[in-house]
Length: 309
Picture 1 (cartoon, rainbow, N blue to C red):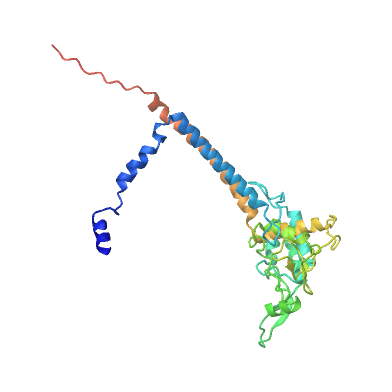
Picture 2: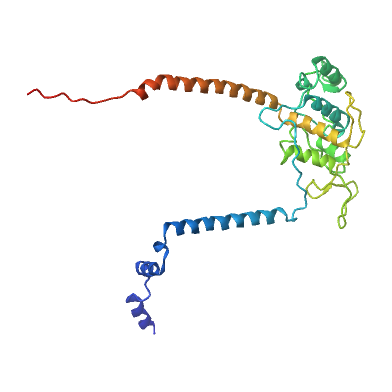
């Protein structure tokens, strides 16, 4: 039996012949006989079917509730657009919110008091704000550290001396630094606003431990931060009604600036670049028409000399 199988293999019975198979399959294909209009119609039909399938798949994925987190909606922020700047009045109120509410737990360790000058406050106001804080400095001549009033050059002090103290005061949760929180979260400004205004009672079937609160925009739903803002939690200097949404909007605008302090300068530079670019484009177009009009309108003709007889 083995010898017979070997002879069959050597004879080429089991060898593949790709050329003959291709020729046989091409005999059954009628695509080459189709007209051009029929091929175009089938191609358009395939593209349409693929597009409809992709649309149905995307719609199906958009309504699946397999994540334990709510995605924040998009809000119409004032700084969106190519030439829109931050609302500096809202940023000033946002500083008031941070100072009176957020600074009890969260730090702004990458923001100095001097950064507020000509952004939210004047230089005199910033100096007065800095003097309200006690900054640890030293060592002095005796090698000891001491406390002194803050200066405009100082960075905003942390509410806790170290991470362990922060966790001990917040049931083991570590309050994150807010300097770049908008850039550090997906859909940052919408996430911050939705998180601050999204606290609610937990739905049936979800149990929270002591010291936890339910927020659908926080991963897992259980967050160690109590609702920080509510109506009239502070009183704004300019008399703006301190509603929950207004407070959340102002602190979000302020944190947008701390995360992107060059925002307005970048927009201003874009406007200047666009203006200069338009002038240069117009000049280049005029120069091209002026310099090349003679070349384009010149007619070159070759006239051979006649042979003298």
